[in-house]
Image (tube, rainbow, N blue to C red; front, top):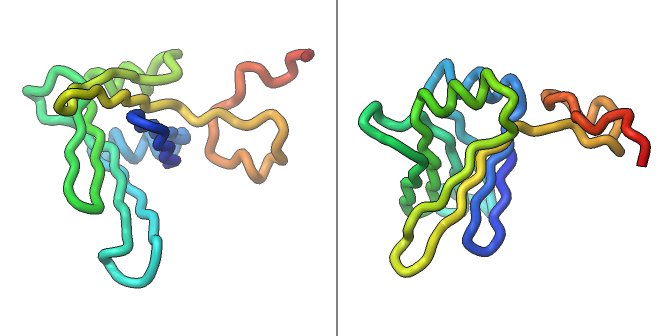
Length: 127
């Protein structure tokens, strides 16, 4: 799972096997280690939200970020043609943009660098 943070937006990209694990277990997580020790680690996760949830949400704790998605929305995205799930949530006086996407193969990379990605719909297209 890839994480991208830009200004007030958070984007997660998942490959096919990661999406399958996410739907099977209800959670997938990764960690980024900035230095030695637990206090230098940022954990980010994608979780299935409780049944009562009706949209994307975020749970933030020091050094831990979790994006929560309702099961029906996650299943529809995984099974369908949609590239992503997006939304905004209020965070005080601001908005946090969320985007969860299928990870497509990069056209200009070698096959081994595109492991566990979805076929790029632009592959083979002339520029």
